Image (cartoon, rainbow, N blue to C red; front, top):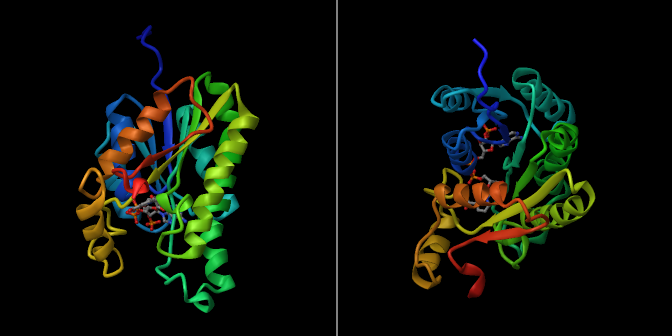
Length: 249
Ligand SMILES: NC(=O)c1ccc[n+]([C@@H]2O[C@H](COP(=O)([O-])OP(=O)(O)OC[C@H]3O[C@@H](n4cnc5c(N)ncnc54)[C@H](OP(=O)(O)O)[C@@H]3O)[C@@H](O)[C@H]2O)c1
């Protein structure tokens, strides 16, 4: 039966079997988006995440591999016929004290930049023609407070997030007016990445004691900011800190 209801928009969230990406996927679905859930390894968690949403698709793909990033986007568009929002959330780090320069080997640099920077880039490149056709296309990159402060789990990680923030501005200046590009920069968020971690436990305590909002963040806090940027139709090239005010310390 023909219907006049507008077709629901489609969002692709990389690294959405867990943590921030999973909550962003759930939040976008609750707002009426058809969502593509993705992970590289945790297939069962990704499939479960997608199955719990009204009209979602799970696609296993390692976005640090160019062919996988392209296949992820192509599969999303083949399945739904459109792409409106890309959230580049998949990321990785290694906990390396900044003073231990030798531990941040070229291999560590390649691994972290390969996913955080090149993965973000190649997924965005693959998605751009589809986002440009959307009429309301937007990209939200997931950076970190480490992208603008001399902090973070390792120097390669912090540098990768600084690169994502500048990539956000450069792309915003390039792909408008068809597509907006923004980023969120979370502070310490409670996810599998940070919970039960000897590295993050003392930082979490410091955040609870000293930051203006006196708590660590929840994935929902970041999802709210991502949704805000998706809806902010006159905003592009912005990096929104979601850190409980930690940057003010
Ligand atoms: N948690 C924090 O405090 C915090 C703070 C600032 C920024 N961030 C950023 O937020 C993002 C998500 O972090 P999180 O804490 O939510 O971590 P998480 O719970 O560990 O989730 C990471 C997600 O990314 C997926 N992933 C990893 N490598 C991938 C790849 N090569 N291709 C596709 N998916 C991949 C993971 O699944 P598989 O491993 O199964 O592939 C998982 O779904 C990251 O970019 C991180 O830098 C987090």
